[in-house]
Each structure stands twice: as structure tokens, then as C-alpha cells.
Length: 539
Image (cartoon, rainbow, N blue to C red; front, side):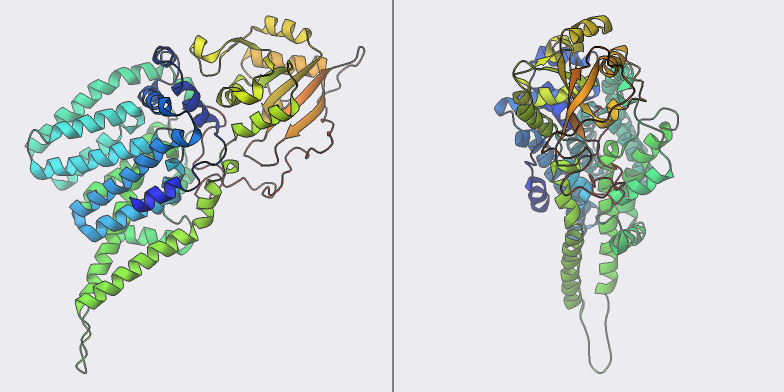
């Protein structure tokens, strides 16, 4: 827990929220009735988390406080994984499992996100520990704590429900008696009844995850690397070898293997028909990998601890061997962490998240004049103004009809296409905040308001300035100044922006990675966003 807390607090204030975090930040600061209204139309799956964060941010609304619950949850999870290892295989395995969980880059990534995934992982780890205790104790009362924790965890995020399948497989592998099945069945049934209303409501909001695609075998390989404390080289292959050895520890494997395989397997299978899978939704399964690796290392250590070297009156006892093996284990964990130190460092930079909304606000402060009209393309870009309103206080949002809190939406209601045309006709200049891909002239968004924005800009305006922050992110958020075309000036297609003095060309930034090499926004070696979120969408 000390290791996890240290890693979690390291670089916690990275200087900017990204899109999904900004949603947590601005929604949690609404009143409880406003949050409740929002959940009827969007983000019901995060309802309990938003209400919890509402209480947290009442203390102090800031980026560090936003992420502190995730840090604390990851710290608790490391302790729970350790306690589970102790109960299953002894103190050394428990200590190893907890430390392995703490130093895995994927754990550190989500320990520093203002979203619910680290809290869900803590709930699942706690429920799994309570499951093992209930099996050992065998009393009816032992199932009440288990059912309560699983129920709260599944309400916190409904995609934690597959853990019930993992626990059912665990009971089957342990060959528990009928009375244990009966107790677990009642608890699981109560959880199902509790979660069903949430599932029913969230089905009507499935458009929020429409960006997901059916996962292929490449996603399986990427998840395996994300679940390893070292995603490549000897550490990765050594991890796989120790996991294979750990399978021989029957009791530990019966708990860890289903937790590792069943939830991702269920979500990936369902996603072949209806995509629901993302690595972050199964963060809680990482605990199974840490337990298996530690169990494998413990078995190897026990075998080596029995070594006796006889001959010429020389005998090496078990105690010195165990001491040497313990020191070797500590050294191996330290070396593993140090080899991944660059990944941990990169992950603590705001430039290695999908976007940085603080940068957008800073650009607005420097470039916009009081009273300037601003247009967000698409409307989700308004999250920058909601998360960092200081940069947009002096300007007017020309497309906004009703604010996000009052309308019960995430980023507000915009004017109709006709009204938006009339508003744009009344101005000679407009600032546009957009991701570069959103302004692609070949793009035809399904929303008529977004199509109107692009059409009016292309037909009636021309680009005078473009500003982009020097930190490169996955999809550069830029600020463009559009001015009205002179009379008789006919648009000839997409015009490249004129470079203002002192502004870097689009896509070029100090310290940016080479073109074609995506920024390493996640701990895995595959850098095409294995751990990051959706491109400015929320789920």
C-alpha cells in the first residue's frame, strides 16, 4: 500500500484535465437535482460515482482532489490484493502480489484518473476477499458483506457484473458444498435485482459507447501486456512463465485465474455482437494476474528453499537460501519498476492523455478579445470552457442556446441550424475551438447543427490565424480565427491557414514524437491508446 500510495501521489497534479475527467469535474459540481436530471438522459452508468464526487469536490474543487479518490482506491486495492494473497498462499505471496499490482503501469495510470475505474477495482478486490472468507467460514451471515460490496461495486459501474461469473467459476473449481452455492446464489440474485434498473436505463443511453468496435486478437495481446508489470522483453515473458507455474497452486489459481480471464472473456464475446469492451472496463481483472505471478514466484522460491548441497561436509541450509531468495525477489521487483520508470514518467505528463483542456483555455486567454464570438466544433469541445471557464469568461458562445447544468446535458444545448446561420451572419469574425480532425473538409457529421457549422465556415469565412499549443497530444486541439470573406470572394475549397508570427505550424511541437509515432499515453508498449479514453467522448 505504501508503494501504491507513493506511485499514485507522484505527479498527481499534471497540469490539466482531459475530456472524461472534465466531465466528472463539471458534473460533480452541479446540484444533486441537476445531477439526477442529467442521469435520466446520459451517463446513468456513472450516477453513483458522480454523487460521490459531488461530496468530495464540495470540500475543494480542484484537479488534485478530483484524482485523490482514485489514488486512495488503488492503494486500498493493493492492500486487498495482498490480503487475498496472504489468505490463499501465505505472507510472501501476499506481499509479492500487492507490490506487483502497485508497480504495474496500468494500475498507476488509472490511479491518477478522475474516473470510477480504480474504485471499481477496489470493490472487486474486496468482494473477492469476502468470497474466500465466506467459503472458509461457511456461515449464512458471511454472504451479507459479500453481497453488499458486490452490489455497490456493480452500481458504481455496471460492467463490473461479469465478476459474478468469475466468482461462480471459482466456486466450481474449489468444489464447494451445496450450502455455499446456496449462500452465493442468494447474494448474486440480490445483486442482479439491484443492478437491473440501472441496466435498463443505461440501455437507452448506449449511444455513448457507439465509438467502440468489436475487439480482435490484437486487443487480447494488448490487454496481456497491460496486465504485466513489464509489457515487453524478459519481464513480460518471465511474467507469463511465473503465471504458468502459479497455475499449479490450486487454491490460488482457482481464485486468480477466473478473475483474470472471465470478465474480459465475457465482455469481448458480447462485444462481437454489441461492442462494450475497453481495457479500462476490466481493470479489476488485473488483480488476478498479480496473484498468479506471485503464486508462481512463491512456488519457485519454495522449491529452491529446499535445496541442500551435500558433499565434502558442505551443507547450505534452507534458511540462508530463503534469505537469498527474498533479497532476489526484492531486487527483481525493484529492477522491474525501474525498467518501466520512463513509462510511469510519461504517464504523468498531461501531453500523454488524449487531450489537455487546460491548454485550450490558456490559448483562449492569450488570443481572444473581450466580446469575441467562439464556436466549438463539435459541441463536446465546450468541455474546455466548462472545466476551465477562466479562458472563456470574456467571450460569447455563439452557438449555445441553454447551458449544460440547466439543460441537463453534458455540454449544453445548441441553437437550431437556422438560428445558428442567423447568429453567424451577424459577425465578421469568429474563433473556432476544434480538434484538427473535426475540421476535415471531407467530414460530414450526422448532426445537422455540426454540418451547418462546417458549411457556413467553409462558404462565408476564411482562416486568418491558427494557434496550437506546443505540447503535442493525440489529436491537437487548435484555435482558429475565421474572418468573413470579402464580397465576391468565392471559396475554392479548404484553405490552409496563414501562419501568424510566433506560432508553430500545426502538428509541430517542441519535444513532439516523430510523425507517425503516437504519443505514449499509456503504460503499454502499443501506443495507439491502449489505456486512454475515447476521443472526447464519455462512457
